[in-house]
Image 1: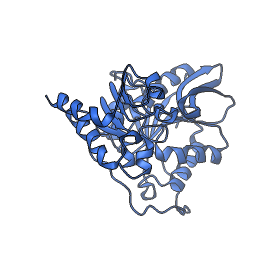
Image 2: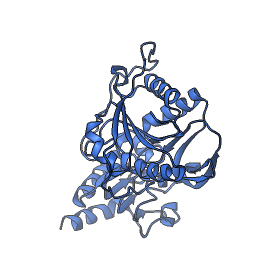
Image 3: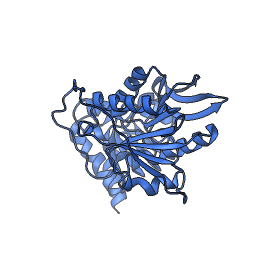
Image 4: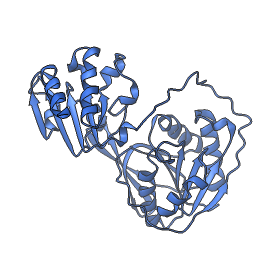
Length: 325
């Protein structure tokens, strides 16, 4: 095992047999490893090393490392942090990178605390300055950017915002070595018990080319069906602002925003959404935003390429008819 490596850590399988966000983080990690003159390793928890070997080679990974243990099923926080802490103690990586998701928000800060290192969440770019890492991260609900300089010799922990990096086109590369990493989790007692895990089916909202999202301006849960209908007619997926999820109108898997899904569609249609910074953090990277809102002063119009000031409930049926024509 090589020390001072750049390590990408992933778990699960979501997209084409790959963990969600893997290709984006591998793109960043490949660039970073070249600047640092370090090996690039891919550490997987539970994912078959043989199943990702081709992707690993395409992104310049030197070694695919795998930790398998029954206690890691479902990525429980206590066991995962312990396994990663043991891994860091044994290998001393220069930096460990995660694709930020719900689990990472718990695991990355706790891991940093365990190994006595810095952690940066919501990262969108990582550069180098001498031996230091310069990490740019979204801050204040995505309204601004913060720059963190990580100096020192220890392992740095960075969680990369989903869809903030454009994945490089895979290229032919040398087949990486594979290695099984042993950890001792016998003493771990999980303090949080998962009673039932919600299972998402079908495509991920983060991968959608077209998203039609509804907000509080729809007025009632019954009207959200118009959002679903328009999204289907346009060949897209329905999304929602956080208030609709909080009210129980729609499942959290459809929530767009800083505390929901970070998306990067070709077209984002915001209907009855004010455009608060927390929501825009999840859709601001769209190629184009179209907005419908009664309030001509709504913040969403500052971000929209196309805007209509009007009653969404009057316009939606017409848009659905046009999309189906």
